[in-house]
Length: 474
Image 1 (tube, rainbow, N blue to C red):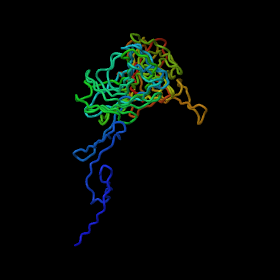
Image 2 (cartoon, one colour):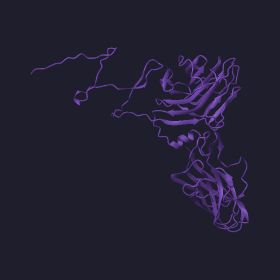
Image 3 (cartoon, helix red, strand yellow):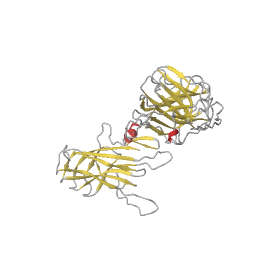
Image 4 (spheres, rainbow, N blue to C red):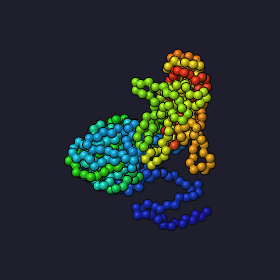
């Protein structure tokens, strides 16, 4: 049997690699090793390649990111629940223009200012921690003896950079990547001679067990190998931004940061969304209005509430959860507002959020002896009304202004017998409601707890009620 062999010259590239078109017939296929290109090497000169991983049962491993913190600096002031601020001559401002601004103040060695998150972020083995921020230098470039840093670390002195952490450092000599391990500092070379003036860039630090990658506008700028098993001695770190003077400074530069995000990558923590929101300071006991943190709790320090008469249109107490006291003097069958909280309407300087409610607990006792017949207190959660009054009506279709009436969710009943003495409980235990389908209050809407006395109007006496609402902002 004759075998015919036809030879044609193979094509090669400049590096003598054979130009190949892979076969499309299964019987002719061989084996290949696959790599993903994470970065083309535009700045480093070498492409960053990584192979995928397959389990012993031939399943490809997939990384899942977990959001640990995200914040946009669009409000009109410091969010004191999330950010710790320390200043020595140098100052920060936040005016609702969409950024934190490190001002051109400070002129001598040791002067500076930082913002550091109260929340800390652990290093988790082979799961890299990713820190991202958007920022830039405005007005003029940094001067001699002036530095700005941002990344992971725990600064404690306004004019001194942390000695343990991983961060970008910008000076008049350029942009550097830094890994500090208990005072021993390793730096990249100059990543960039300068950053663009008057515009924002995206900066990312990816912190792994063996390497730290520094990215600028999604391009890998530099790498530091980790010699000590982890990049910093501390097993966790805060997010920080800091401007310092290392000597005499004459500068008019302004530095702005628009937002930050921290992710735990590759590890599926199974952490619930609501747990993540609470971790970054979005619990329902605090809400942010115009960038300022406001307490939603109703609880005076060392002060019991003064009992007030209830109204159908004006809340007795402004807030969400807490301790309130009321007089059972409202007409029988009329809904009275114990507590109410209005959601800020959407605006450019206020990140609008939904309030997601999972449960409500109520318990009451007589705090001033009742005179008169029995009080039968029916409680309800009111949500969704666009004005605080419970008489707010639903608008007709395409009315000039859209309004909502409150939606009523019954919570339970407490009964106080006639002439109840101080300390009399309205029920054997607390009234507790957990909602399998969460209740959502949207921006521009109100949430309120109301009570209706269907018993007897008293002539004297007061009831104190403790209200606890299980919720978070998203």
